[in-house]
Length: 333
Image (cartoon, rainbow, N blue to C red; front, top):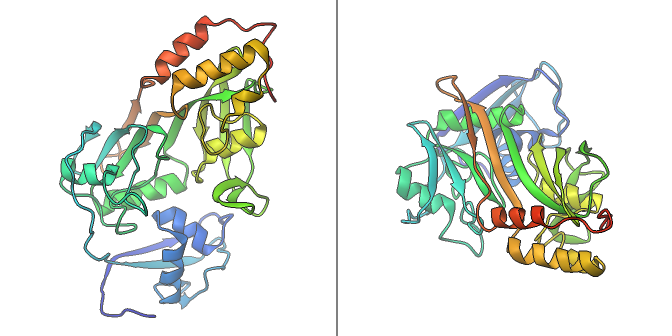
């Protein structure tokens, strides 16, 4: 169904310099931070053209292809500004960097119409970019509800577009701290496995051979009794990527209610008691977005931010460091 009465708010034209791994709808969804369903609608309405012609969402782009994408102005947002305390690490007229607490949903969705980071940002900043979905103004990348830490949000459409492209080109560096059950087999390694909806449980993600490419780098910082503290760097940004990759390795994130629920109960003896105590002291998913670095889309200045582990995770680390491994550790996996 074509809606010709709405003038496009943004017209984006670019030439493909490197053939994407994904089909057109997935590639554009990543580039412009839109849902694949919205990209599919843009394609159906003829608002996406390749080499001057209408196209199909399953097309595989090639080097040299000329792409034009027209993104219509979204309807007025129904997101209501709310006076919710949030930590803003940096802000200017183009963007802001915030430190999201665990337990806060990033944007309104089914079951969470209010109380989100977007509600808080609209109150604090007064306005966000209009690119992307109507209920996700300013959101360039997301964190899971139970993950804490640093995010960059866009205040202008120009900044949003440039930041989205920087993410697609892997130019925004995102570093995490995670505690994982058991002990990984190497101190420094990568997991390069595709991710998609779990065919056995559509509410979860999983490593699926036909899924979208996903690459995560892990480095062990500390070895505890029955868990490891890991520094994690994302090269792609799939849903639950860190959690899924660690679960695939057999070392789910401590406190993960989806991919590692009650995993510590499989530990034996003293390690089992240690694991239950670590889980109790952590009190939440042990995953924190601790580092964020990128080039400012307007000034070209390099920006870098760090966020310390919040309570109770930092107290859990102090406790884990004081508890020496018994019999060399080991754990599951």
